Image (cartoon, rainbow, N blue to C red):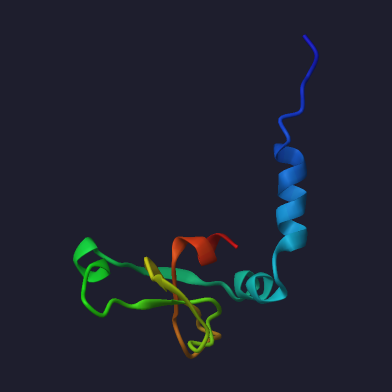
Length: 86
Protein backbone atom coordinates (compact mmCIF):
# COMPACT_ATOMS: atom_id res chain seq x y z
CA UNK A 1 0.00 0.00 0.00
CA UNK A 2 1.48 3.39 -0.93
CA UNK A 3 2.35 5.87 1.79
CA UNK A 4 -0.32 8.57 1.39
CA UNK A 5 0.28 12.09 2.61
CA UNK A 6 -2.26 13.31 5.11
CA UNK A 7 -1.62 16.98 4.43
CA UNK A 8 -0.51 17.53 8.01
CA UNK A 9 3.09 17.90 6.88
CA UNK A 10 2.19 20.89 4.68
CA UNK A 11 -0.04 22.43 7.37
CA UNK A 12 2.78 22.46 9.90
CA UNK A 13 5.00 24.42 7.53
CA UNK A 14 2.17 26.83 6.67
CA UNK A 15 1.37 27.40 10.34
CA UNK A 16 5.01 28.23 11.08
CA UNK A 17 5.14 30.62 8.13
CA UNK A 18 1.82 32.24 9.13
CA UNK A 19 2.82 32.72 12.76
CA UNK A 20 3.25 36.46 13.46
CA UNK A 21 6.61 37.64 14.78
CA UNK A 22 4.95 38.64 18.06
CA UNK A 23 4.00 35.05 18.83
CA UNK A 24 7.43 33.73 17.82
CA UNK A 25 9.01 36.26 20.18
CA UNK A 26 6.66 35.22 22.99
CA UNK A 27 7.60 31.58 22.50
CA UNK A 28 11.28 32.45 22.73
CA UNK A 29 10.73 34.44 25.94
CA UNK A 30 9.51 31.37 27.80
CA UNK A 31 5.87 31.97 28.68
CA UNK A 32 4.37 29.90 31.51
CA UNK A 33 0.70 29.00 31.84
CA UNK A 34 -0.19 30.43 35.27
CA UNK A 35 -3.99 30.28 35.34
CA UNK A 36 -6.89 28.51 33.68
CA UNK A 37 -10.06 30.46 34.34
CA UNK A 38 -12.87 28.52 36.01
CA UNK A 39 -16.39 28.24 34.61
CA UNK A 40 -17.54 30.65 37.32
CA UNK A 41 -14.90 33.21 36.25
CA UNK A 42 -15.84 32.78 32.58
CA UNK A 43 -19.53 33.39 33.30
CA UNK A 44 -19.07 36.51 35.45
CA UNK A 45 -20.88 39.66 34.31
CA UNK A 46 -17.47 41.24 33.63
CA UNK A 47 -15.09 38.37 32.81
CA UNK A 48 -11.42 38.80 31.97
CA UNK A 49 -11.19 39.61 28.28
CA UNK A 50 -8.64 38.31 25.80
CA UNK A 51 -5.68 40.39 24.68
CA UNK A 52 -4.61 39.58 21.15
CA UNK A 53 -1.05 40.42 22.17
CA UNK A 54 0.48 40.61 25.62
CA UNK A 55 0.55 44.43 25.56
CA UNK A 56 -2.78 44.48 27.41
CA UNK A 57 -4.36 46.97 25.03
CA UNK A 58 -5.60 45.07 21.98
CA UNK A 59 -8.81 43.19 22.72
CA UNK A 60 -10.18 40.52 20.37
CA UNK A 61 -13.64 40.65 21.97
CA UNK A 62 -13.68 37.11 23.39
CA UNK A 63 -13.46 35.99 27.00
CA UNK A 64 -9.99 34.84 28.09
CA UNK A 65 -9.71 31.18 29.06
CA UNK A 66 -6.20 31.32 30.51
CA UNK A 67 -3.31 33.54 31.59
CA UNK A 68 0.33 33.27 30.51
CA UNK A 69 3.21 35.07 32.22
CA UNK A 70 6.84 35.65 31.31
CA UNK A 71 9.72 36.96 33.39
CA UNK A 72 10.60 39.15 30.41
CA UNK A 73 7.17 40.84 30.29
CA UNK A 74 5.63 43.10 32.90
CA UNK A 75 2.03 42.28 31.96
CA UNK A 76 0.42 38.83 31.90
CA UNK A 77 -1.18 37.67 28.65
CA UNK A 78 -4.86 36.80 29.11
CA UNK A 79 -5.92 34.88 26.01
CA UNK A 80 -8.83 33.06 24.46
CA UNK A 81 -8.29 29.72 22.75
CA UNK A 82 -8.54 31.25 19.27
CA UNK A 83 -5.77 33.81 19.85
CA UNK A 84 -3.63 31.30 21.72
CA UNK A 85 -3.66 28.97 18.72
CA UNK A 86 -2.63 31.70 16.24
